[in-house]
Each structure stands twice: as C-alpha cells, then as structure tokens.
Length: 265
Image (cartoon, rainbow, N blue to C red; front, top):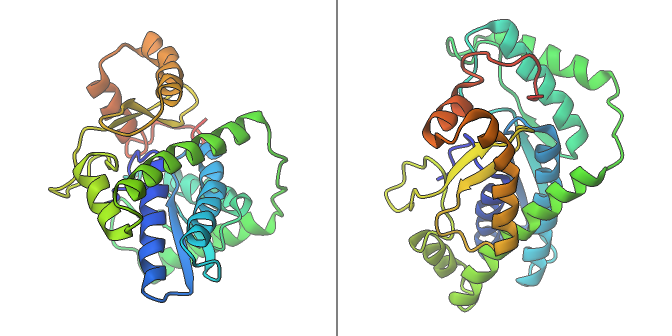
C-alpha cells in the first residue's frame, strides 16, 4: 500500500510495525524495516530513529524480544528530475543523510532514474558517488530540539494508530490491520489499494517536512492535529490555501528539478 510519495513518516512506521509483528508471528527472527526518504533531513533522520524504536518496542511487547531489528534507507522514491546533474544531487545528498541515519543498508538510485532503466555503468557511477560521500567521514551532529521534536512526534502518531488498532482487535495483529484500514486509521496518501480510505492529504510545511493537511480519520490527539495545522499555517499564509495546487507543486518539485540542494532546504 505504501506509495513512498509524500508519505508522513508515522504512516510508513505503522505499516512497518504491522508487517514486523506478522512476520514475527510466522517465526521470522530478523526484520529489516524500510524507510523511504521524503527530503527533509531532520524529519527523515528522526523517522529512522523512531522506526527502530517502534519496531523493537512492539516486538518485545508482543513476546518477540529475540527478533533482531534493522532499518534500511531507501533513497528518494518519488519522481526524479530528468536533469542528470540534479539527479546526482539527490543520490549524493541522500547518501549523506543515510550515513547519518543509523540505517544498516541503503537502497541506491541512479542519475538516470527519470530517463531509462540504468545500465551497468550507471549503477557503477552511483556506487562511486555513494562511496565518495561515505568516505568523507560524515560527522554525526548532536541532536537538537527540532530533531527530538520530530522523533517524538512520529512516535506519538504511530503509537496512536497501532495501539487503538490492537486494542479494538483484542491484540490480534491481522484483525488490527483490517480494522485500521477499514476505519481509515491507517490511510496512505495516493495508495491505489481499493480498500484504502484515501482521505488523508499531506503537504510540505515551510521547512519541507511532510505534514497532514487533511488528517482524514486518523486517530490522532487534538494536540497533534493542532501541531500539524500550526506547522502549515505559515505556508498557507504565504502561498495561498489551494491545497490541490500546493499538493501538485510538492509532488512535482523533484521531477521539475525545482530545488537547489538535496535534501530540500
């Protein structure tokens, strides 16, 4: 169901937690949770940390403390620019983020993502770019207040969805997933699944973090919903309140190459 395009991190985290729990029920002893970069470094790094914490916590809570948890970083999964130089910026900038994230592995894209299926030489170039970035020895910055806020926000949102779903399903994971989807508690933006509610609409705020412009039926607290409204208020005052137009802009910004740096500044 995940589209990887403007997906708020907490929604991606919930999907990963449910998948990990179902895998553990089947006897799997090592899970790798995947996070697709959205383009705001502070939020993306927070998402990787939160995803690891959520996976470990819910697996232990469900009686699977022996399951190993890792996180994989997916380089930007949305539409790439046709400009090869801009695409290289994404590959390099994403690698720098992945290096800082604590992820154990990175799913690598190429500079021809928007043009063709990559050739051997294209993949070799991406590996070279990634290794050069990695070998610069990225220094991990200490977490600041915003980093911690983003992480705690993702944890709070994801737990609200998972907890109410498990509670209503009497801790049966499979039933919890069904309830979450049917009631719109788990709602993936732009998902082609016919069971997905399709009510949630995301937007980037003025920092390029992905927020909930329309929360649909997500079981989030009034405080969390107010945070998202406030986070988008400055953007809406500056750029107008036509959500459809703003959404189209946010989805197309990379494909058009309308950025100076990656991650988005």
